[in-house]
Amino acid sequence: MEGVEGNLRLYEPELLRYKHIPKATKSTMAASEDDPLNKYILNTPDAHKARFLRRRQKVWFFLNFTSYVRKKQIFTVNGGDAIVNYDPAPNGGDVRNPLNRLLDQISIAMMDSLKIFDAPEQRKRKAELKSKHETVIKEVLGDAVKDMVALGSLATAPSKQRLGYGTMLVRVVTALADSQGRHTVLTSSNIANTGFYEGCGFHTVGEVLMGEGNPTWDGPPVILRVMVRPPAQPQFGQVDEKM
Image 1 (cartoon, one colour):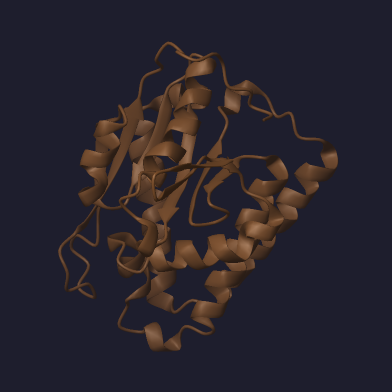
Image 2 (tube, rainbow, N blue to C red):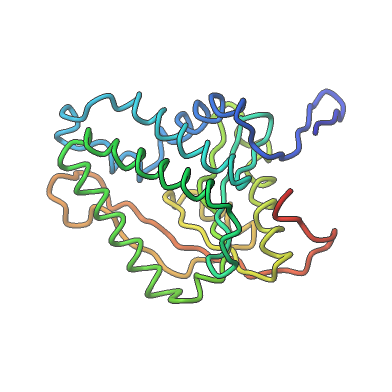
């Protein structure tokens, strides 16, 4: 949906559709260029050994977005200018039909297969990320995370930033969590975004350092923050998870 206020064209969040995926991929790739974690994972001394990097990124995003479109768990503003995906609470029950579960497994397998083209140090850093992230989640949230809605990727095309798109998309996910009386959890890979998320009601519960003590990394440690937002009382009715 869209409206007009003066000369400013306003857009409202909507479910991402298959036709939006190319634009959403372009926006997300552009937004991730300066992300500290993205730089840490990809800018390795042996990066020249990685093959088809940009092409693989496009394929990975296509597969990932396709999966979330199928599950109706990804929203956009202006057809791909900004996107956010989420995962429902694991304890909420798996409502997907067997076919969709199978398709998700196929998508995950295909995305994982792209790792064979990574350089050795890139694979090492991805393993570091997986291990440290799982450890901090277990330490600070434990089993409570199973009752939380997870806000996943949030990205806005650089040319469309500071227009409120990110805030609108975060509110779609938090409103859904609020309607279920659940906390919302996210992991931020850029400390510059901490203030933004705090403005959306999140607070930091834990953090990890990537690259600390890694002799192949000449930059400062990359800080990942786990942030949680408690549920609030819905003000405008409940959000239907199947919308």
